[in-house]
Amino acid sequence: MMTFKCVRQRSRLTVQVVSWRASRGRVALGQQSYACALGRSGCRVRKREGDGCSPVGDWSVVRVLYRRDRVPRPRTALPVSSITPHAGWCDAPSDRNYNRAVPLPYPVSAEALWRDDGVYDIVVVLDHNSKPRRRDGGSAIFLHLARPGYPPTEGCIALSMRDLRAVLVHMTPKSRISIGAA
Image (cartoon, rainbow, N blue to C red):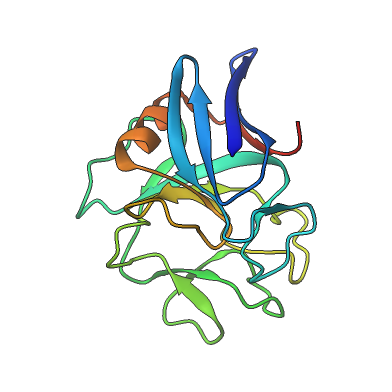
């Protein structure tokens, strides 16, 4: 079972994966521990577009997006903005806007952020494959809401609404998500 630890280092909160074996894990924050879903193919150092893996590495937390028509604004020190019905995220490796927010409709492949299933009602954007962006290095790696039963994600980390809100309260622009071996 994957284990996450949240570690405070000089006002910096780090969510750290210390081992992996499956697509489910735990996020620990102080004395609290929360169930989470991970990529359907586990975790991998060499993340590729569409491989279903959560990427191993140390990622900054960029911002929070949320559906203000469905949920209250998350309490966090991170930058927060609302998702619009035309919000998308480019997942076409050959496009100049690969792994960036784009307006929909978009001329190449892009994932819709305005979804009916609720998993993107709150989205924490990680800086995976953003600076520099590698073609086919993976896109749209987020911390978002889990579906009931915590089925695997396409490479993201997913928590329940209650648990994601609890973690967000402690996050700042200096927070990190660190996915790696023990």
